[in-house]
Length: 121
Image (cartoon, helix red, strand yellow):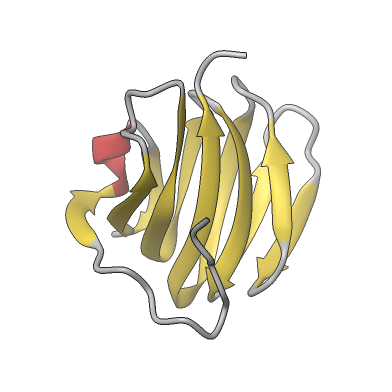
């Protein structure tokens, strides 16, 4: 078991540069990403980790199904297919299906989420 507590320090994050390195299209600002693996690798069918991003906006189609919980900061996620838009803050969670087009608006200086990703159902 690996506890993931909101008051717990974050694991060390590997800075990987622009969110475009993950296949996203930058809309505004220069959002940069940091990641840390908790279980598995990004290429595994099931993996979880920590994702951070600086302020900015970007769009991406989810390459996996994801359950995520915000650890720090705030962001508004918009399902570009339905127009549904929700603002998330620390402690809030979501589930998104693989293939969903999502616009991200990071509204804090840094946004951090813990995620569980499933590549193939």
